[in-house]
Length: 248
Image 1 (cartoon, rainbow, N blue to C red):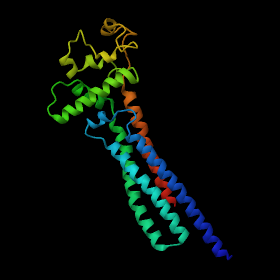
Image 2 (image 1 turned 90 degrees about the vertical axis):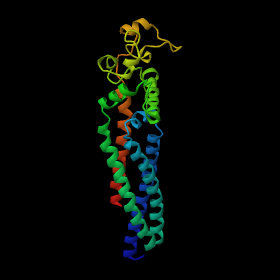
Image 3 (image 1 turned 30 degrees about the vertical axis):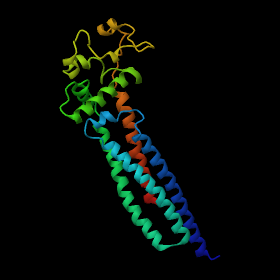
Image 4 (image 1 turned 180 degrees about the horizontal axis):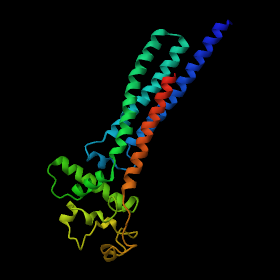
């Protein structure tokens, strides 16, 4: 075998290896984004109510680009093995298009992490939690989703109360405050420590704010923590795949 043929074979082998790695990365990116959009922590209603759920949009784009990276890696391997210029040209053109989509996905996920502030969720909770008079069907849907999500967070998930703590219900004007008596409902019943039957172990102690009978920690980390982790995953793993693609 001529020395030139050996060099070509080595180059082809490197291209095939690079595409195999890219295909595996594409499947991993797709799996990560699917896990994100499946909303394992059931937090999507809180983002939906803000009318800015672009982080989930970025994850959906990530699913598409991850699958495309896998398919294109197969096309690239076949094109290299057959030394087919047409297939390789199609591969390069499609790769540039998918590359642009993944850039958009990664940037969107990275930028919108800063959107998840405590004040965002606090204002949303105060305005829509247990809202008895929504202005329209869309507001009704969002208010119901927020109420359901907050009840689950405070009661089942992390045994927390409000965004920063139970004082949120006292320090700020809210729908909850206008429809409930302050003495009977200083904060929602879900903020009380419950027994195995789902009843407050000491309702009067909870109302009075006696330590041990109510949850005095906020839920912000329970909300923002998973969202930020998954947003970073979608963004930076996407950037890593893009860097590998450029190397190929």
